Amino acid sequence: MPSVERLQHLQKVLADNGLDAAALIPGPGFFYLTGSVHHVMERPIVLLVPREGRPAIVIPDLEADFFASKGFKADHFRWADADGFEGAFAAALAHMELLDGRIGIEGQNMRFFESEAIRRNAPDAALLDAQELISSIRLSKVPEEIEALRRAIRISEQALENTVTWLRAGMTEREVANFLINQMSELGGQGLSFEPLVLGGDNSSRPHGKIRDDVPLTAGDALIFDFGTVINGYPADITRTFFIRKANEEARALYAAVLHANTVGRETARPGLPCGELDAIVTQTLLDAGYGDYILHRTGHGLGLDVHEGPWITRGNEALLEPGMVFTIEPGLYKIDVLGVRVEDNVVITDDGLESLTSYPRELRIIG
Image 1: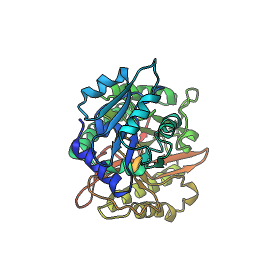
Image 2 (image 1 turned 90 degrees about the vertical axis):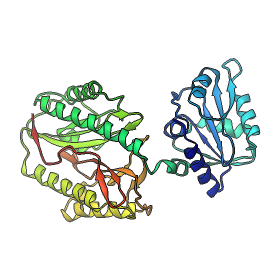
Image 3 (image 1 turned 90 degrees about the horizontal axis):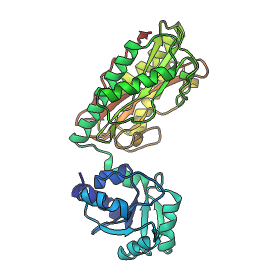
Image 4 (image 1 turned 30 degrees about the horizontal axis):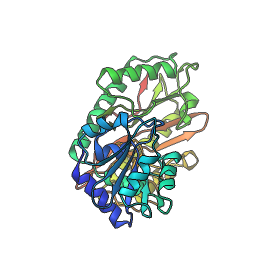
């Protein structure tokens, strides 16, 4: 549902940072403001939000009625395939008095041809990367957003339990992943947060490895699941590590270190704590355990309409944790070409601490 408060929040951010407007394309920020979902294809759709007053949208004819049905108030600059979009951009930018304005764009989302359409039709305007500013209005989640995340997490956790109870040694990562995907769908998931990672044995040592369909799972393999389903646009992002039939002493030691780091993170996070300090504290537990060479990534990232968004739980980020912020705590250790371990929870900052939205057991578990 479109929200006047969300629009006003963005406009205040623009005014406070000296921007005349923001330009958004379909995606999380666009949906957050308008309630409208559009596929990003060859036909440009660009929403122009001024720091005060009524927004405008450049939109193809075949998408315009659907956008209007969502109730977001904006001036429409429609274009037809036969005419192209150039005239609509020119008219919208002139109407918005942005020909020489400072326009913030979503630097990680907007494509080159869309930004160039703005440049051509407002050659004296300054286009600035405002990704963080635009997405900042989504940092603190309201109860209905958190409830959608809870539902996505509950479905994902049940799908995981069904999968690990079913799987057996000798299966491939692809077989297991396909079963997990089907379980999330059958339990009511509305899509995938991202293509799940199901990584066994030496493949578990690659945090973003590729699922294999020709290597069977064998006794002693670590098996990492990194996955989630989506409810109303909000994704779960959960990681658990299991072991097939047995775990050797080295695997158990790595697992204990990661679980301890995860626990420290969940017990430490609170309102007012700098994001970078939380990362430093969690990472230090892994360093103290003697595994500095096995650390490949930060402690976590924000979770919302984007699977990866602010707040960033990484050293150097001085932003403070605030109530309503949802993020991951996902320490990991990776002995390349041998094994990896990661335990990832989805958490929300409360008025006086932290609540873990994930509840799936974290203790070392032998399966298969």
